[in-house]
Length: 311
Image (cartoon, rainbow, N blue to C red):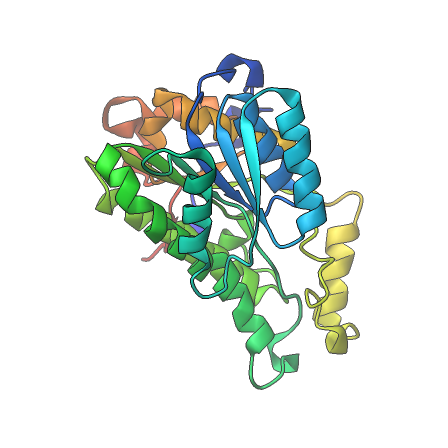
């Protein structure tokens, strides 16, 4: 599979000014998952700064409560903390119900599926039950789909809404020891492509996004690395690649947050419905291309989608 993009010459640091969208989301109700650290914190803050009421969903209660308290103290938007494992049975409906109980309204306006986990190690060293490997698919695919299913009835009734999942550029790369994570991100991105077509004409938009390479806690969780395989050549090679100071160029996580606010608040981004958006690139240039007749090169070359090149 290959994720086709516009030439690098079109990609510069994204000129998304967060103050441009101050108050644009006033009164809208948003759910953001994975808000105890990393990109989720920045996304929740950015949506609140734009005026949204934000339900911050995370497993770690103290860190999540600290975030919510800081948002509420800022005077921009409102926030409520919801402690939940997004992959637990029935979690999606409970999260939606708790959000509506806190903020009122007839439904959710914005869903940002940001919570995610990883499993790093060669497949042949995984336990036979594959439980830890499969858990990545449960959290990164099943949980976002379940939450999407839970918010869609309200969005469809109102005739508007945005559903967005944080994906990753690994979906079009063949990285060693990242099979579970890569498979999960390819799956959720393709889900959003299909959902956009399914919801065409309803006013509900579907996106997947990536922040580029950012500092996260994906590799710090207890079961992230298969500790029985740390001596494996593929694991060692992966660690060396990711820690190489001359390797991947890292991006500030707040850049993705600003891009997400723009996607939600700016009608011009409707032209990218169903697409996989790289928040570390110049999304405004991509958006302008998509507004051309037939979506320009993006339409003719089927760019920003997951597809397989064939002879």
